[in-house]
Image (cartoon, rainbow, N blue to C red; front, side):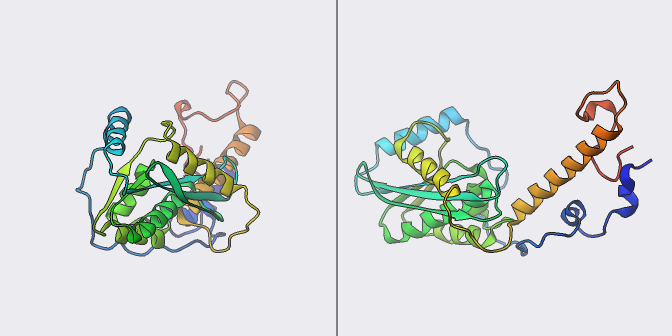
Length: 246
């Protein structure tokens, strides 16, 4: 038996369309381009070792090098996301930029912030961009992601500039520039600006998942046997797939 008739009523299309029900128009991803700046199977260092390495790098930089801290933020349960950039030279902040995205996820904000940072790096002879998002760095280095493709492509182009270096920097490590960018990104999410445009692919995917999980929970609350808990458990022999709930 299939709950709520989901199997028979499931619309055709992609997995995302089936989960969402086709009710949300999103930014359409294009095919990937055959470019990649990072080797396949790249392994990230541990947080501790990367933190030491980047701190040593920052300590040895000449005063003339511009350091660009990029960050994104999103409050749990809200639709908007915020991005921010804090630029530093010789121990002082030289520029601070931020903005608000509409229906988007943290990944989208991180990518936009990185693209802005690398755009500003064009005006510098030497620049070091720092991001705490491995996903955004990977997308920029590959030149492709299903979500926020224009920003990913701009970041990819920025990485090919001479004199520009990009590093992963673990979040909340107590570095002033990183904390400043984090603060600006959080403030951007609360601004009164109302961004326009379609939801991002990442937002639509996350929203579809949340919508589906809500329907499963509602069905479980109404139909569960008394001996079971208030939340469905994957260890109780059934799936959260709407076409296979039994």
